[in-house]
Image (cartoon, rainbow, N blue to C red; front, side):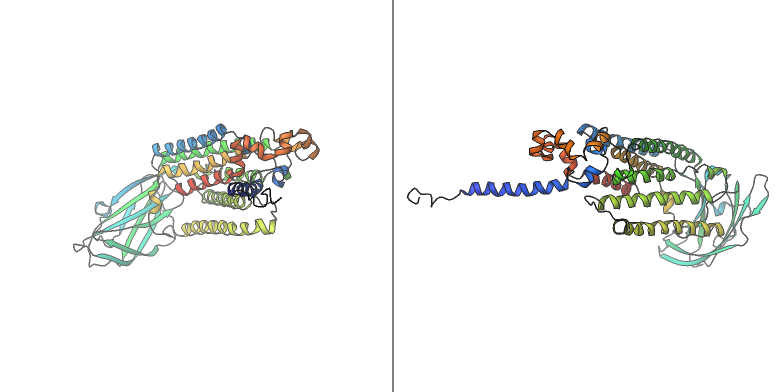
Length: 458
């Protein structure tokens, strides 16, 4: 044997390298079968097949194109629509009845323009101008006294508060202009006109007050009409999508639904509440109850959506979803957020009912919102849920798959020789898009897109 030269033979390094690459590829191929959907997964042969896994490239692109086109339409409506807030400005030096003698103290008697229920809410803000030739930065505290009276159409005056409301405010001045001050906020309107008497105490005489500007801010009635139609259209669309989605799952047992399909059966009814079916009561009943329900509905839907994202991301490739270990921690975290949101909204509403001048946040950031922001964010959540309902609905052959894929005998009879030899990986090689959907984890891509747009619009 040695004379023939077999003992001195060595495997070429190229063959060794190819063998190493082949074994390395086999390891990742085996790992890939546990990443993508395959027949040995409990999820695949126990849950209803979703439409998402049967979409072709063309259908996938059309779904995303339709989503972004609908979102762009809502943004365009917001940009072309009327402004959310209308303003009515009054200068203290122009007040005649009574004429203001001292601009640093007042009293300032202000009358609102004629209001209707379509104005929804009322804010009164003020801006103080001082003589500050040196351009010093000033920060001082003073006391503000406010009395609010409501006037109905027959000119009879009813006092809406039992006492004068006194609050301390901090005045920040840079050169000759001071920061805006929120004087009062009415969550709903009981009267067509309001009379407001304002007095200031404790403003330093070192920098004389040259002017005090007041501004009444209320919702634009034209925007309110647009909001009513916007909510109504989405309410009808959500109801239709909910019915179609429930109809598509009627033939399958709830135990066979996937986690996404179960969550959609919860989120779609909550989206109905988010669209607020009792919103028209705001204009028919002079009460804080419709507004309070609207806040609860919004908090409930947004917290449920957050809980869905947490469960969807954490539940990827996890087949043991015990209630105590999987759901309870997430419910506790999101539940605390929901309780905080509802408690803060209730506390704010209660304090404003007792004292219209109460402010938990004394600034005017909320007055800079644009109609495009409101309509785009509102439309984004609706279109996002509609898209999820479409891709998570059962596929056309889901009923057939649910009847035969659990039976190994039928699977072996229906499998071809190539499928028996090469398995599911062979099908994925023939259909690269199926491999992309299964192995790349396309489910989180939908959620990440929706989450990114929500953060951008918020």
